[in-house]
Image 1 (tube, one colour):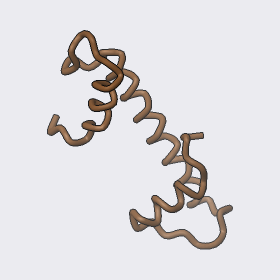
Image 2: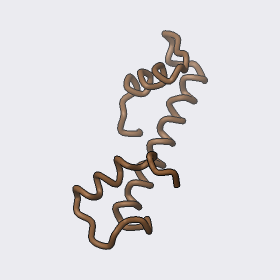
Image 3: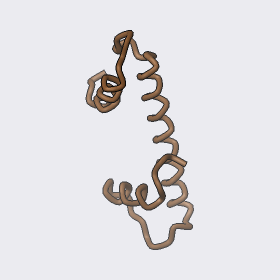
Length: 79
């Protein structure tokens, strides 16, 4: 799946204001879990490209530390 377990995804969705009842079998809950999986996969790929120097803002020789910093900075740039 996304690297998160179902309980983590549900907790984050609740923090975001998405309602969950006690049943995890509803189509809405399944759609929310699928959405989380797709977002996580897209973010992993974007981070991988960043570390592969697929992002022109990244210098040619990046250390692991610099790659981690660049990943953490994602979403804070007004790109």
